[in-house]
Image 1 (tube, one colour):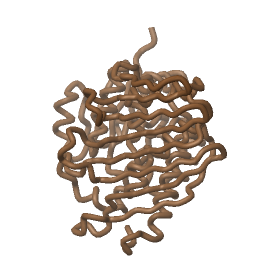
Image 2 (image 1 turned 90 degrees about the vertical axis):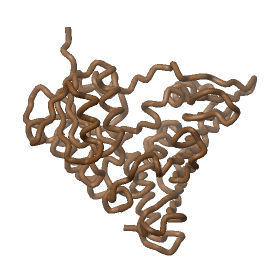
Image 3 (image 1 turned 180 degrees about the vertical axis):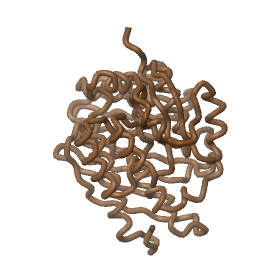
Length: 343
């Protein structure tokens, strides 16, 4: 019997650390140890995953040959450096988005990944942990809507879900709204348009309602283009308190023979819960409840670590999605609509 993949966590500064560990453990991974500073999430993380050792020196994670994968949800400006160290110590790395906050960081990661042959995977949770999005991908790949020609992604978030630390409002530490939230949209555009090359046509960000944080961006937009499809994405921090979820996140794909829309968190028509998929083809309109649809990402990633395969997500796809988000962020920073230059 093949022993389980042992994994560790370096950095618990975002709630995604909890979901990454939960998914990996549910898929059969063994959570061995973690290193975290004194951030507000650290104690709760330690209590939730009390079976894992908490280590003071992260080098002990890197020097443990039994650990094959390091997951990272540190402050964004630390993630690329942590990932580089993990890769150079022979570990694969799963990092929360954004995996890098500058094109220079991303290029260094490309170099290290090529040199080491280890996987660098960004946790694109809006696709990997959304059953409706997984099902939508299967339908598109089966030809259910013909050839995709346009991808629309809308990613509103609630700013007040939890007290936000100072670094969150500083693009030089958090990366900016397109580098961060926009990376989900870049990932989905590439995935649903089946593109291995794409460009940013236009991008903009603004601070519309938070003057107390001058460089913060509360809304961002970008236009993307591949050889066969175009895409538009809007992300923001304006989910109203009256909604009973953190955001009415939507994905729409237009094909030559049909369309589909994913409402990931809620259905305004009144159906309970999230993970709703609406499919319209030449014959009918259907609603699919996808809440029970399986999520293959974590198991596939653990298999990749154990077997040296590349089944969870393509390495070049991860780099390209990250690059598109960072290029959109850089373009938006050149001229912000409110007259301020972020960062």
